[in-house]
Length: 191
Image (cartoon, rainbow, N blue to C red; front, side, top):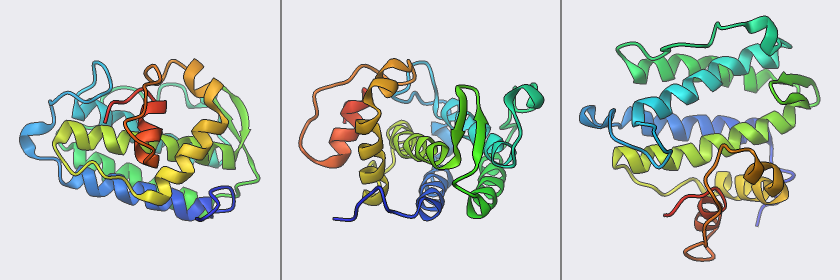
């Protein structure tokens, strides 16, 4: 088994972006308003959340701060074409992550952190929200195993922060010892 601590994060972030892109491209037209496992979020809301995060990525990776950004990434970022909005955000994020110095410091809303830590947080979000999107849109829910292994290890190593963040549901009993089931349960999902 590959050690998630030594996996190239550049490659994993690009893989996570591509996996999410593949799902967005297959959202049926009648499912954009469907609910997701994220309480109060439709498929459109979920994609909007990821669009915002990935519009932020190039800015933060280039040294920008939350304070300097102001409200530039607020509001409806999807317009009439949520899939195209995601594609634009993904393109900029992929380029930024490909060139990112993972030893540099990024200025997050939670404080300064190494870019590699930011990458791990983004990988966790891309992975779990990929499942949320699949569930809401009625798509295949199986996640890329390398992403799952990396996200699971990071979430286990940072369980206090993950569970105390208020961003995820209450930990559930896993359905099996499958890594995807373990990850989803840790993040409050019921596969």
